[in-house]
Image 1: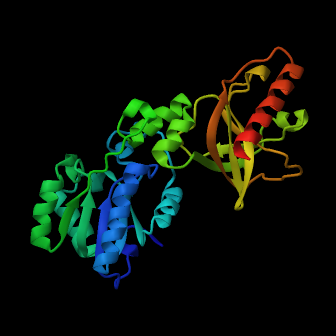
Image 2: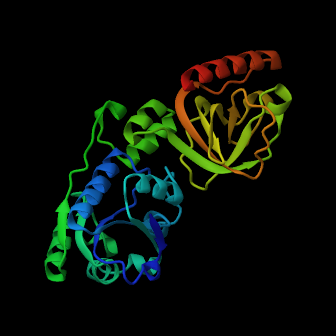
Image 3: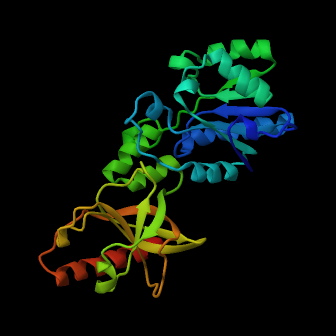
Length: 312
């Protein structure tokens, strides 16, 4: 799969495209419906499936300080889209100037001139252009004049997560904040992940016999509620069962909120400076302040036992 940042990186001989546009943060099961449809239609038309997205998040540019918690960085979204069969992902730098472009200008520059769109697939609530003035009706009207079709896909998916609320990135963010990672996995179709670089922490885990990877997460990451979780730690392509702690280490009067993962039954790991991914499978317990180190060690041993059983 090709990845382009900006229109200038699109190859001149790219050919016709089937396009879908959006943030696609999390690439949840609703997003997957629309992306799968774009790939399916592209294969039948002999065209390429292209996803267009934006960086930074539009809300951060239009309303600074309002960046929503990030469910997946762009590199992770691209990986997930590649697994769905997408041929290319175009990341458009979202600037204040770009936000002021009319819907007509956006369509001409991006869909017509750059991607030579043959078909554009969107959800019914798709909006684009300055002040979100464009909708799917306008898009279809412009398409009739510019030789592309528009297909509207109902991306509504529902299940038990969120009490039956339609699946959305907003729902995922709320469930992550609540620590309901089982429900999150239902919406995403996979465990929730945070990523970052392994940095040196207080190294108390090492002293206690449970050395942890302290992951400095990507800015704006949607980090689950404080507590202990079962999941996996992936470094350099190796996926290891893990017990994961999120919080401030109250037993030691900590103040900094951290994400730490103990790779179960692994010894001698030196992960400092490496990129790590932490996948959250299930919530085990809340964050507690223990009266003694022995009480903490007993509970940590129990946490590891539960995490081992869940990830076996």
